[in-house]
Image (cartoon, rainbow, N blue to C red):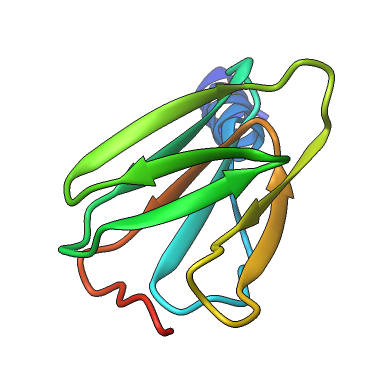
Length: 107
């Protein structure tokens, strides 16, 4: 294999380890695993204001806001939406969670 092909394959492999998508059972929410980050990032790009609960700590997310959450030894974090009937999901701590512009809180 020539040097170009080896370099190209190495770059593709590195990118596949940097970010990967996770399946989330909630409409209009995306999750991307970010291996190189020690924190979880949560972004609200929607027009909705809502509260999320991360292991008993509640955070208000207004439209176009975000937060970072220290992993503190947790491998996975459960994100609870207390204003809904039963919406919660678990993600790898080293993730970027985005509530997309089309996200609507269902109460």
